[in-house]
Length: 418
Image 1 (cartoon, rainbow, N blue to C red):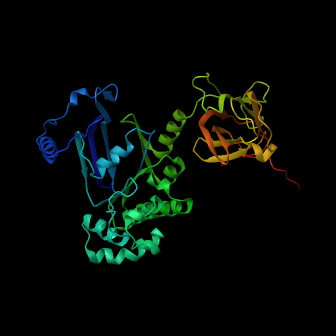
Image 2 (cartoon, rainbow, N blue to C red):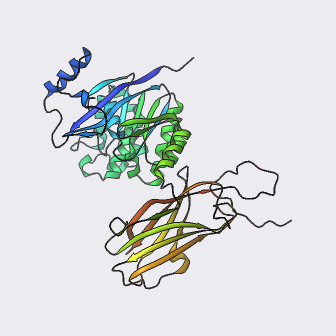
Image 3 (spheres, helix red, strand yellow):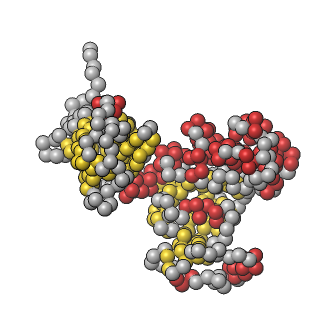
C-alpha cells in the first residue's frame, strides 16, 4: 500500500518587489487568499510576467512553476546554489509567507527551524519559549511538560534555560531551536541550512535525531549545502535552479548531477588580471593539473601535479600558506595538503611565483575529484577558490582477481609481506 501524500505543491510561484515590501496590509493578504480560493489570479499580481529571466523591472521571481508531492515518512533534500529559492520555498511550506500563485496543501503538524531565532520571543526565557512554540503548534501544556526535560537536555544549555533569549549567542539559539522543532512531536519537520552554525558534535546529534524522526514515519524536508549530510539522511532530492525545479529524483542521482555542474569541469583555469581571485596582496592567476602519464591521462597509477601561478603584489614576508582541499564527487573530503607542513616557510618574492604539489601515484581511487585552494595569512583565511579545477581519474592496470570498483575515496598501494 502506497504511503499517503502529506505535502502537495502545485505550480507555486513567489514574487518579490525589489526595494519595497510586497504586501503591507492584512487586507492585501486576505484579498490574495480569497482570489486563490475562487480560482482567480492574485489581484495585485502580474502572473503573465513569469518566464525568462527571474527579474522583470522591480519584480523578482524567487520561485516559478514549482510542483512536487511528498509522501508520509519521506525524507526530501532540497539542494541548489545560493539564491536558487530553497529558503523561500521553506518559508512557504512553513506558512511564514504566502505564494504569489499556486497552491500548497499540507496534512499534519509542521515544525520548522529556519533562520536563527525564528519563532522565539527575545524577552522570554528559553523555557518560556519552549512552551510558546508548543502552544503555537497546538500542543497542550501537559504534552510539553512530558517533553521538557528531554528538550533541555538535547539543547545542552541547561544552565541558561531561564535566561532571556535575547542574551543567547547564535549557536545557543540554534541548539534550542532544533531541540524544540525536533521534539515537539511534528508530523512534518522542516530544517534549513541553519544547522551549519552549530559545532560538529551538535550537527552529528541533529542528524541522528532527524534519522530517528524519519524512522518513526514522520516527514522531513531538509535543506543543506553539505552533500554528504543530504546523501546520508535523504532518500530523494530536488534540485532548485533559479527558482525552478531542475531535477527531482533519487538523492544519489540528483546530487551527482548537481556536483558535476557545480565543479569547474576542467583540469585548468587561467584568469586575467581583472578577474583573478585573491586580494590586493596576492592573486591566483592560474591553476592546472598535470598527469605524469605518458599520454597525459589521469589514472590511478600516474602521479598528478597541481601547479599554481601566483602574482604577489604586496607580501614581502614569509606569512602566506596554501592548502589544497580535495573532494570526491560525493562531496566527501578525500584529503587536505598543507604547504608549510611540508616545506616550511620562506620569503615570498614580489611578482610571479609558481607553486607545485604532487599527488603520488597509487593514492586516488578512480572517480571524479574537485580541488579547492585555500590561502591563509596571519593565522586566518585570506581567500578561498572553491572547486578551482576538477579531474576525472580513470582505472589503471589491475593484477588481482577483483575487477569491480573499489570502495572509498582513496586506494593507496600499501606494502604487503608474506
